[in-house]
Image (cartoon, rainbow, N blue to C red; front, side, top):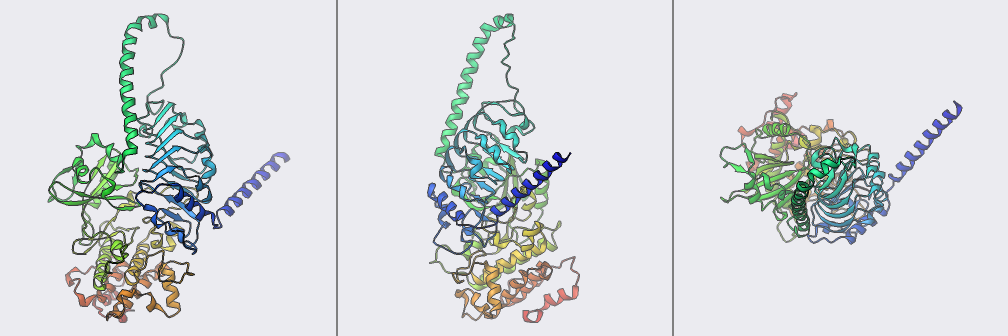
Length: 619
């Protein structure tokens, strides 16, 4: 009894020690993470220059957190949480230097041109990985049994490669694993019994795989009767010859398809798999829009060519399409969604009825195999982010009147989603990337309602963060603690957009700040306010044009939106009315467009906001 007690105490002590050791290993930022990203960049071919933002000529804390595809545990420290480099045309072997990203929990290298074998020491390279996606590449060789030592893994995607051999039985040790996919490879042998309940689609198109959930493996028993063998000999030889011929035809055709991956500069292998579903109808919400089928979308987007991509984000990839009659539209390919066809169609039926002047019109949707495609009206002037943060410095900066028009229109759309839409919608992913501009620069909100279709990853060490890549700067501080989305979280995110409009700065990186400054846009504004230098925040291109009063008023609204305590932030309806009052002289809106929220408790206060024309009086 005493020995058992001692052994239990010792086990508890060891567990606590290991946890403390793990915690320490994840608590301190080191130069290793910077060396890790340097090594990755140096080891890869980047023909489309997607990694141009990986500039290491910087010594400020957290600068790597602004790199494309890099997410940090905290935006102010160089400690990598996730690396997501999907669909960038990158080429090379699995980057061994990734071992220096010691606290990383997620890696996505999917839809690129990586080749070679999966490292046999992968569990040492990625000891804390919870999500690993190597799908749609050219990895070959066996699936490394050492993956079984990646004990925290939840998602493992190895489909659409050239992997051979058997699925390691050791993977049974991955008791946290929820998703495992190896379809479209060259694997052989029986599927381990612990995977028998998985979907057939996760193992499809592997000519040598057998066992549940696929067809049973053929018996190799030697107990067959001699009479049966002799009686079937003649027919068997003939049948075998036919099977061999068919098998070789399928096999070599499969190899031919795999070889074409090397010649796939369009990055649309997934679209090619829809060849047999071209006749599927696109469910349309607008009667004025001509009837379409999936084949029409494929033609319009050049089979979803990489050259047609106009937006990348957490919810999916947006493509531009041009129909045969010259009509332009946008097609969004949603990220993996585990919703059934019925659930997805039900969500779409709701979103299809959500109509407002400042929302991007959802024209229809299409379900083809695993793919979920949404069809939107085309927005000719792209995103607010692209128009505000110009890559080409020779282009003229946006005029203030246009910025204010966009801010008011966007606020109106978000207020309608919060207060008048039925059902009410919390956007959850507000940023300058989700505000699109039509031909007249009228702001249109995209991605509304899509958060319900996403599947947050239930991981042990990873944190699910809403927002597009590099958009952690928009996330409300309380969300980072609770992972609960609220309307006041949307208000915070929109406050960041207003700060962008006034300052011209990005959420995570302030170009005008001193080199020693390590904070984000909100922290910079707070510091300037405390120092009495708020005027230094205004975009230089807007200074001295007789609009200082309007700039400061919008800046005040933005600062109130980003108050740390959510209760101290205004509602989205109040934000809209305040901005509308500021822009009253421009006649952007008319009286009959005023929103009247049905759940506002203080009617007198709202009335004051509506009739106010001098925002100083309301603040």
